[in-house]
Image 1 (cartoon, rainbow, N blue to C red):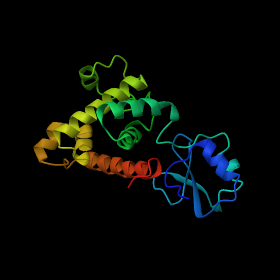
Image 2: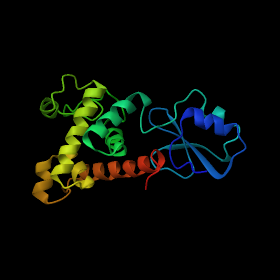
Image 3: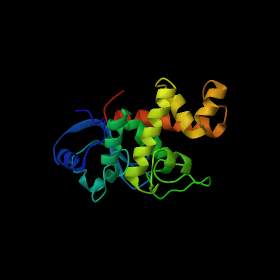
Length: 204
């Protein structure tokens, strides 16, 4: 049995009551207190327990949400926008994780606001009335990602760099701009993208 994707609570509790035995099972806690289970080490999360079986493991996850790439209440918005604009939902989740840590009330020192940290100019371009509104914010952020991916021929790293530093900077340098912040940003997003694809969607 493979646990290379995040399990939902009901499925996990069912497994926890069974006699399924794995080589190793890792339990993690995320930045929002969400719990996650995996069959391998995961970077970016705090390891809270490791064992070789799921039996009687329900107490480890009791009263905690299983991590699903962010709080579950945002998943419907993420998937709707991803389907609408043809953007990998794991990438959207990765961008949100790095941009705001899934905090819809986040505001940067530069005025970027909400889950996908929209600047007012970008929000206006996509007719966002309330940047703190998760659905509006995610829809506009994903639409902007789609625009950048189209501009850079579906090169995810360049689109992500442009999301952070602007398309003009990416064009100017013919690639990821040599800004430490942008390079670190791209590295983080790509890492989370890979993790979410593997753990949540079972993809390589």
